[in-house]
Image 1 (cartoon, rainbow, N blue to C red):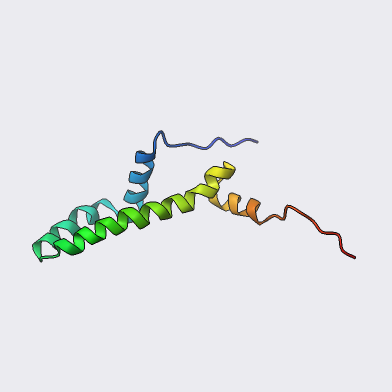
Image 2 (image 1 turned 90 degrees about the horizontal axis):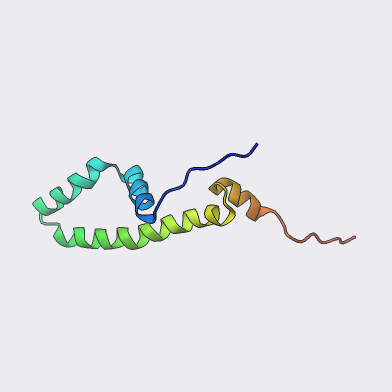
Amino acid sequence: MHNKHSTFSGKLGFVLSAAGASVGLGNIWRFPNLAAKYGGGIFLLIYIVLTLTFGYTMIIAETTPGRMKKKSLVEAFHTFAKPKFVSFSG
């Protein structure tokens, strides 16, 4: 039985759906308003820069093995764990 997986049409759609699933839309709108209200503009700037750099890097690092093997992430890790060479010592 061959299972067909759904794919995203582009990178932007994937990044936005991953961000929305992990953060939630309410927090995305509420946090900048609270930071600006209480004088946390520089914190907000540093937060955005770190979120874009580290967040994007972690998403790519997490999805690359699955895309490379064209399987789910768990199945990809199982294929990486299999030894390629068997030594016959005796």
